[in-house]
Length: 91
Image: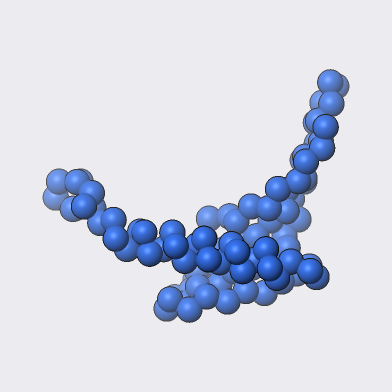
């Protein structure tokens, strides 16, 4: 059985920017074993609330724009959820 998924990796921060690698993961399994590979297909960049991307593969712009929308929503959610440093309580 073979499958592929597109995964947005956790960000790497450098110079005030967050870089999110976008990886196409392919895996193949059989009764005797399995195989997995990852290929970078894009890089999503966030700097000061502005999002952009660089594609490494043709024809994936729409997929990347969808991923950026999800990351923006997640970023907004993180801003809303704050943890009190004294109590550890999330508000």
